[in-house]
Length: 563
Image (cartoon, rainbow, N blue to C red; front, side):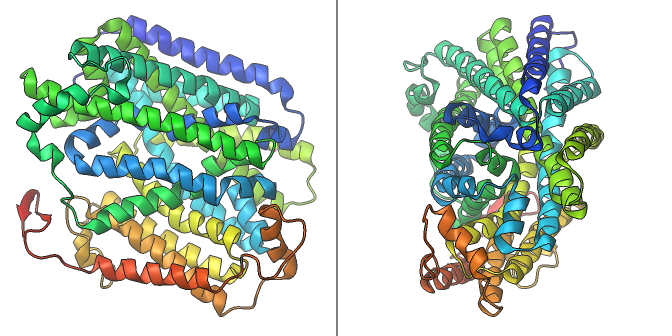
């Protein structure tokens, strides 16, 4: 997509308004911050509606506007798997983690893991995993804001990165979790409005009967789509393990993403945590199906209007369609929505990074320091982290969505597994968690370094036995299966052969589930760990299954060919 070549005044004005309002909200919210608890978890006073909207803004990052449409257009059936898995992951979050994490009353994911397993070492290890995940997740979002400023507003990319980064850093530093929460609520409303309304106008221009409700607006295009691009509706064309990898990364990754988990420590009680997740699931599903309709409309538009759009521009298809079929006013709204989406995700990540460094590292190394000094240091830490993130974003990974999917996989193996087992299996030990966390994180992180950073072909990376099965254009996704399954297996097996946790540690499990008394047999069954290990081993075996020639396409070099 070529830059507009001139400043898009209306879009720039609306974007500036979003930025200014974000700062004003944090200045207003600052008056509520009187303690370290206020700064990190908003005094645990946030209601379900506010928290649900804040979670939406974390889920719907800038990839909602930039990245997902390209996946829909090029990935076809894979896009359905991503959407279905991502939506299901929130249901898993609600059932497996949300209310129990709130009852634990920690500040962060890292604090939960440390306190649940009685280990300061695990706290520091969790902080390292958190930083890896957060940097990968952050990498594309500030860069994306820069891209929006460059291509759509006519402003140099570096200006967008620096301005967007400074605004987020300022309002996170000033307002703490209160400022972040109310900003994310505001930004969620903006991004939902600024996506659904312009897309509705696009669908109306294409002549769809259900244009007024974008998730249903592409129904009229199906017959024409079947005729022009029949391959779009083909069934599963990848090895099933690819879809399983996407599911595992989404399902356990969302539980492991520290900036998501941190939201559950801000609500009033477990009931509010559960209902905020319900609201989040509904709104995320609504927006994701709208984006799916946008990708669908793009394929239809290109094939029926004779318009040729290069693949490199598919990331920006929301803006291209709105510009071509809706006009400048709607495009300005879409641009403002994308800026809001980018800001909200960056804010949540900066918050967890600052909390991890001050609360989970400095606070443990210097327990004698009072809360007032920690609060002052928190302001400084947030500002410094924000500046470092801006500098890193000047040279981020090339593909935004790919970096985020790697982050999900690493979060699932390194943090999601210890959280789920810590809630549901009393016998989990700190030794088991340490081994599982290290191995799972290393598999995911080294996979990213070798495949994405160093550009190695997945089948050539030094992963014993399994590398040869990482074939195909999405071979790198299969690394998530290795990371998550090895994390589960090692955590369970090592826990089984190491001394049981103390009753005080195991008592936390009953308390998280709302029991007032302690029962050794609750959540301590031998069946659960056996099932987990059996399923994990089955997935590893299934990964090595090679279908009959021609069953699935393979990637040889850069071309699609049948075996």
